[in-house]
Image (cartoon, rainbow, N blue to C red; front, side, top):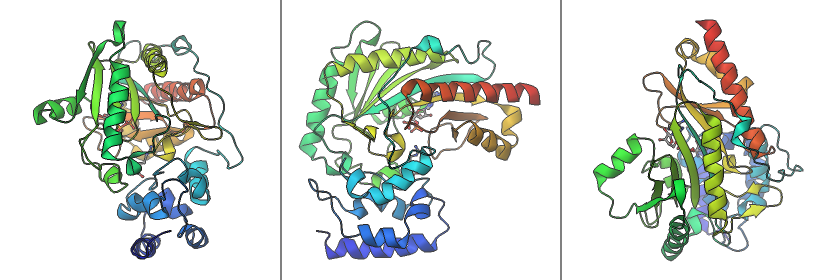
Length: 357
Ligand code: ADP
Ligand code: CIR
């Protein structure tokens, strides 16, 4: 059951959100009748409440989305709010829809986006995975963080060839080293208030860390937003090469770890925006003509199902004209289709930039 303190917090938080000018999907979809229907529910195994799901959105009215699943069951117990948000974010994935089986394709499906190195600074593809039989951040004990870290770093340390590297735990990492890794876009940032208020930063930095190979173009984040984030990145626009490297790493890890996948939702993640394929394929790109008119850029991004972020990731500014542009939806289409959506969209933006010059 939901204790009376949490209920009061929920009611007050909801009132404030409803009266605010928040643009979040939470505010848009959490109608009073849905709120009332869900406010006393909890998930069967972990006793997670609606407050656990929406605390981040209640605390941060500038959220784009504003909801997380504290455990996988929350997607079912609180389906009345997750489903419409999922449908909105992933462009029409309905509550009766089923995420397709994985179909990864190959990097050769994606020609270099910028062979003359005119626009693209770097290309990155990431996916997220949860380890079977473990809940998401808000429900993990300190012991489970350690267990997960041990399992994941153990699997990573078996990697060979181009993937051979080392695991660096955040515990004991020099601040200067940490900051350098963040500035180089390798490491996740610290103190993200959206994650913190979602209950995702408990026991920080315990169990968190980063693995990278010698070339520093294959990286794995451990226990940040998701148990695992697998990342491939390099300078330039060779999306195919970057994608293949990510796929190889994913396949190697999958030999040692079982990942959580839901029949309907696909691969399970903490944030509903990452469900399904979990893939975000992005470029850091300079498009001076297009970005001179932010509204026009946003219009084009919407047209091609792309998302524009700042230079240091989500909720950051674009510095020196460098934007992070990626596929937006990850659910209801295959991995190959998700990356193709990004490839075709970025190609179209570059074409538009050329025309505008
Ligand atoms: P994600 O949801 O993929 O983890 P974030 O927006 O939190 O993404 O960004 C994580 C880090 O990855 C940030 O440092 C961001 O600048 C970096 N990043 C994202 N795309 C690229 C890219 N194409 N090239 C270089 N760095 C990138
Ligand atoms: C927000 O709502 O802004 C944060 N909780 C982050 C949501 C994830 N954003 C996204 O577009 N993938």
